[in-house]
Length: 343
Image 1 (cartoon, rainbow, N blue to C red):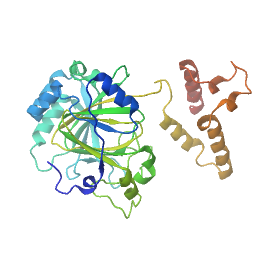
Image 2 (cartoon, rainbow, N blue to C red):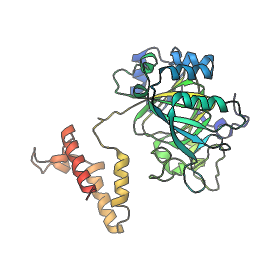
Image 3 (cartoon, rainbow, N blue to C red):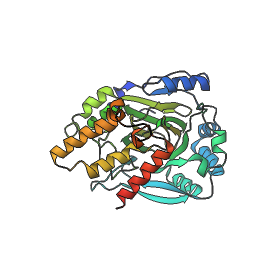
């Protein structure tokens, strides 16, 4: 059922939709995409989707039947939050982390499902292969050789603040309904990001409440809306979220399941840019202004504007990490950094 008041979502542009005929066609769309797109019915034949269409309890029974008999990490929020897993007024998390076996978590969802204001219960980014037997084999997308990490997200009605991820993402709604609100990478200034070290799930998030944006406090969010896209997905639908695109994700049904695939277009042995940002805050941000200007120029020279001029004066074989990185040189550089940071 659509929201009585669609708020910002009713006037935003829609995510483009594409038709996909087979794995090769999906590969072409993923390879050529310069933005997000939706594929309706991509996973409609999954057994998990079919179970969810019979009912939320059937979806839970299907998942519980193939889950490992081990504790799962689960986030549990408070009533009265509208499912928003976020900060409280003191900038602490407004939810608690717990661990329980999947049938126990589902039993709690069963007990609260018909109450007026159930607590949000959310299992985030669970490794499909590591926590379930046969789930991936029976429910997966052929990504044509991409080395993708398959994760499952299970929960009640939830709102996850806008954030971005380094990998590319294909997110598939396996049960329930979800709304994705997306912004291009360059909109970070207009999304009013929170702390980079105190985050709900490891990535800085937008501090704007998309259900009740305060434009007096966050005036540039109006500019972000001019660039935003929204899509509502039913069970069986999928959305491609390119690397670094900001996405606000909502579970709109009483019970929702998402399976997503993350893959990088760069080797796994490369470092994480977020780690470099954190280290730059530690080592560079608070230097005197003249020193910061020097380091900005040096970063441009070695990192952002790198070219033949950086190494032309050095003999081949003596350029070290200034040559294109390999797994071996990346490991040596990582080891050097670890030694320096532990001093």
